[in-house]
Length: 318
Image (cartoon, rainbow, N blue to C red; front, side):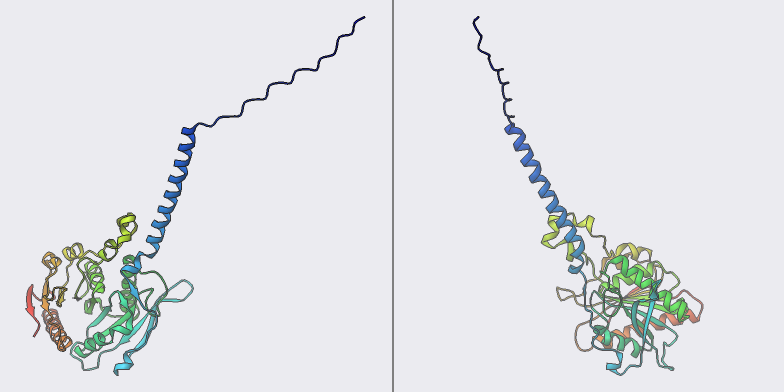
């Protein structure tokens, strides 16, 4: 009998290797690049949000001199304590001389965006020389106050804490309290004064017309939605229109050399005074003379039971 040769079973065909569409590859590469670009842009936005404050604020930590350097008696103060009992804000209380002409008034001094209290001694000596009690303090992030990145919201809160300290702890009548701000501190003083109709008045020395442009005009701001990331504005017009207490505007020479009246001044309907301050060695003397005249007007109206302050007018510092 013939034997058939056994045949081995046929091996199955191997599946064909998958073929990836070139269009799909291009799409995947495009999506990966877009994701990387988005992550890079988001990181840039985060870095800008975290560091843009340094374009506007220039704090210094070391307090290198005190009012004692100028022969003024003062008391170091600290207030706005945390729940753990740590003070957020530190400053100086400089009492007026007993027989000073305006010893019944207290000035809350709000310094500008650079340095710290060390840079304010000349101004504080002038205010004391006029005959006022003075409280000057460093915002958070400045001097020996609690560390925190400065911002408009934090500055406003710091100023509110200072007012609460004066009225609550030192029992100063708010009708005898005057805000005095310089540079960006003047913008702050106007905002705070607009919210406190009970104060005696506000002094604004060289308020900044558009301070946040220091951030928005930076080349890096063009790469991110800067107006969304940065909340600071320090607008003068809005609080000026709401102001209901007397204001003294001290305006010095601008970048062009000639003083320019802030447009916000025209929006104030409450009693207001505009004084041009000329540059030179007599600037502080002229400042003190203008401030004394303005305080005389406030005191006169207060004694006679009339509306506080002086009528709106402009004046040239002597």
